[in-house]
Image (tube, rainbow, N blue to C red; front, side, top):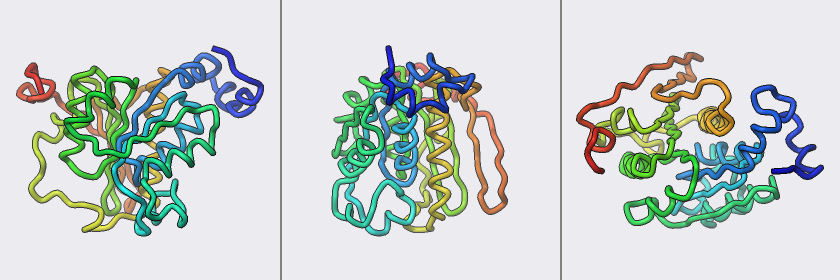
Length: 248
């Protein structure tokens, strides 16, 4: 796989980076990534993956841009209000990097669409804000043997984890918490979305290029108010209905 002179100039800082170089950039160009949720986390993740030269970026989001999104979903502008998020985000990515193929899916990620969306990509990023969708994404990734990069934010705290089969996301969250908070209810500082979304993109780049140690089987938790991070290991649940030996 060769690069044009324009691509060599565009990716110059990657090409001289020891852990990426030409071979790593070729892996990025050949890779396909599905981003579920083009919101606070999906927006910065998508921008950085497109800028990095990931060959195919697919965005899945059924919502439209609302003015309240603009506080943290930096891929959108005032003129995008009322437009489908997946479409508006895809247009922004195409303008950012014409060497990347961008696809938009404006339907919901659910049992009816999960297999088709997940089966055709190399890697999945989940930046959604409801547990039912997160569990659906996780189940599809386990079924199709895809690595999942999952992120979440609320108030001043965010987290990123990487799931490769076992343990899976449902080992971490066995069932939907009855008192689950949403950003619309409790709020979230806008810049936190950029921090966690960028970390998700960084984990994706590491996974694609085989650079460093990904957060596989680990969860990194960031407390923005304290300015502290901690990383915990995730244990596999032997009774997990998704990855514990039974079919989802």
